[in-house]
Image (cartoon, rainbow, N blue to C red; front, side, top):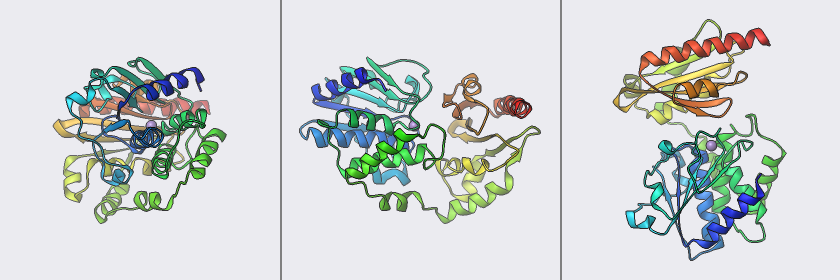
Length: 320
Ligand SMILES: [Mn+2]
């Protein structure tokens, strides 16, 4: 934790009367939780400030809050805070540099600095936990409502796999404890996260019957538009099943390939041993040591990635 930089961020939030929080493209629970949690802290602490969130909406996360329709003039004289995003091109609203000042708050392995202040803490397993660091560091000044606590808890849950992934530590639970002290109610959160449509349930059946394994231990599946269409699920829903491939003893790496609009292929990569971030970097991606995304473009490149992942699995098995 960098207390000096947290003080800088606090001072800027206090200074500016217009603040826009921007998430990354195709947002997940952590980045939306971070954005709506931060919005709630600013609104609860300084009710007169105007805070907007720039994000696309994702059905199952709509309970966290509603994104704003942001006009060009909203950026004039505003403080922009980019959350959970490692590189410029992944920022959801590309007008991010039109404000007076830009702050980057992130927990991914750094790709590039782009803020006037860059606060990156890869030791935190979710970006929401950095917001909680800020909250706890200035607990005599900053306030949060149960609505913000709900958002921060949700992001922590989704990015840590419900406190299961590496990076979860005592600080994680101390931070979460303070959310309970601020009125956190978890029942509603689980009622939104623990639902599955008939369509996705049936697609999951298909998914579990059609994954494959490489010779040395990479479990993978290719998600094609025709499957999505047939089962009437969204790509977001289909790709949320990635960790269904994480149960195999003989597969330390698992990858979900999916074809997006314009025939663009992307990968979600996960590992329970070998570091995969360098491999993701080679394929225009990145993220964390054991959880990454990659932008392949074509199915041809997905085969190359798979071959290299297979090699990593092989080396890992030989070493351990
Ligand atoms: Mn995150």
